[in-house]
Every structure is written in C-alpha cells, then in structure tokens.
Amino acid sequence: MLDKVKEIQSEVADFNAQSIEKLEAFRIAYLGKKGKVTLLFNEFRNVPNDQKKEFGAQLNVLKKTIQSKIIELKEQIGSKKLNSKTEIDLTVPPQPYELGSRHPISIVKNEIIEIFSNIGFSISEGPEIEDDWHNFSALNFPENHPARDMQDTFFISKDIALRTHTSSVQVREMEKRQPPIRTISPGRVFRNEAISARAHCFFHQVEGLFIDKNVSFGDLKQTLSYFTKQMFGDKTKIRLRPSYFPFTEPSAEVDVSCTICSGKGCNVCKYSGWLEIMGCGMVDPNVLDNCKIDSKIYTGFAFGMGIERIAQLKYQVNDLRLYSENDLRFLGQFKSANI
Ligand code: PHE
Image 1 (cartoon, protein in one colour):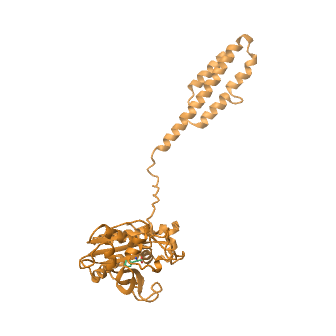
Image 2 (tube, protein in one colour; image 1 turned 120 degrees about the vertical axis):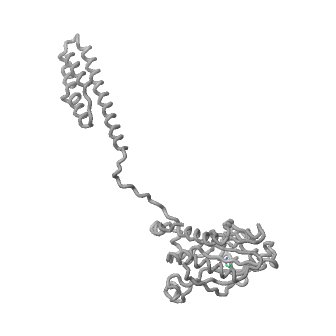
C-alpha cells in the first residue's frame, strides 16, 4: 500500500498542466470518485490495524499535496492567459475618441471676441447681480422707464437685480479708467420674459464701447460694417434705422442684408431682405458725465448684440430654447466648428 502512495506521489510531482482542461482531467484522475487517491482511501479498511496510522497520515499528505498542486497550477495558467492578453495586437483597428463639441453660443462668442480683438478691443467682464446704478441710473434710464418695471427685470431687492444687459459692465469700465476706452463685454443677461421659441428669461450679449477724442458716428458705422463682413461674409451690407435707447443719442438699430437670400427676399427675412441684429448709438453725454468722463472732451459709441441672435442667423436655429436644453442631438451638430 505504501508503495502505491509513493508511486502516486512521484506521478504528481512530475505532472505539469498547460491548460485548465488538462488540470481538470488530472484532478478527476486522482481525486475524482474513481480517482487513484479516492480508491486508496476506500482500501483503508483493508489495511492492517498496526499500519493504519502511518498509512492514514501518508494518504492525507498525498491528498493535500495534490490539492495544493492543483491550486498552484491553476494560478499559473490564469496568469499566463492574462499576460497573453496584454500583448499588443497591432492589427486591432483603433477606437476613435468620442470628442465633445463646443456649445454654439461659445463658438459664436469666441468668434465675436476674435473679430473685435483684431481691431484693438479689450474684453471686460462684470457681475451678473447688479445694483440699480450700474444697470439703470448711470445709463440715464429715467425713474419711470418700463425696463425698471418688475415685468421686465428680475429684482432681488429694491436696488439689486439680475443685470438686464452688459452695458452695466461698461459703466464699471468707465468708472475705472479714463479714455481712450475700447472694450467689449460678453456675458449672460436676464429678463423676465415667458419662455418661448423667440424669447427666454436669460440670454447672452456682447456689448461694445469706444470712447476717445473725436469719435464719430462714421467710426461706429465703419466698425459695425467691418464686424458684419467678418461675421457673415464680405458681401454683407448694413443699414441703420433710427431708434431710441436712454444711454445713446442718436441711437439706431442695425440690420444686415439677409444671410440666406443676400437681400433678394425669403421667408427668413420675411421678404424684406434685411435682418435686425443689434442696437447702437453715440454714448449720451449724461452717461459720460455720470462716470466722471468729461463729455466736453470725449465722445464715444456703443453697441450691443444678442449672441443667440447671431448664432440663429449663422446656424439657422429658430428656437431659442434649444440653446439651454442640452440635447446632444442639437449640440453634436457643432462638432466641425473649431474656435
Ligand atoms: N443695451 C442694449 C440692450 O440690451 C443694447 C445697446 C447697447 C443699444 C449699446 C445701444 C447701445 O438692448
């Protein structure tokens, strides 16, 4: 019997499995129901009593040796498999990176910034929560102006509101330094409007301000003409229509020749050939004086546009709500824009 145990011991020592299947066959051959070791256990009762102790001990050692050999070999085979997996397979096609895209508002904002930076405008920013002075009073809004009404403005307290335009930033710039001032202020603004395809309670603006000696309405017109050509193409024309803002005198609305039909007339421009894109005018002397800039020495122009409006014309987006709904089907369409 003991010879049998020794024989199995040397068989086990020599065994070396390359695969899980072979290892399993080995386990069955020795420890399975009819395995060699199991059979030896069955013969235990035939062993003479005086040899039982030694035989039993040897048998148990044998069983343990086989069990730990199986575990050891299993680990070896497993790690070999892992290693072969980490080898680089140069024939596998690469996984394309899923790139995100910039938001259309950011794309257009960056484009506007670049166009004005090229002609020397700096960028200024200010708070979204503003006081009455910077949003209204310094800008010459009369006490009873409708924009000061709860209907149009989100008031936080009597004197504090969410800014309704970024002209407030320009007041801060004028208070900070003397001319020449040449700056644009991009940012988010808020108005108390019911949300629809054509109106939203917040949107984005870029407002511009240029103050120096001898700044004229002609300078304003040239600047806007340059901007619209850069933005919508060389053939774009502008026209100015008289308008009113408390902070500019004279004031005008700026139209561009329709970006779709180039002025021939289509349903985007409602067959007028023109699209309204911004307000502008010469800074009212009262505003300059309010900001401690001498209106007898300096003149300036200002303009303000909605980024959503420019993006709408550039990309044919006809529902304002799309800009803030985070629908990937909409946002994914701007992947090719690279600014
Ligand atoms: N602040 C005006 C608005 O929000 C736009 C504007 C700016 C008009 C500067 C004229 C001059 O509508």
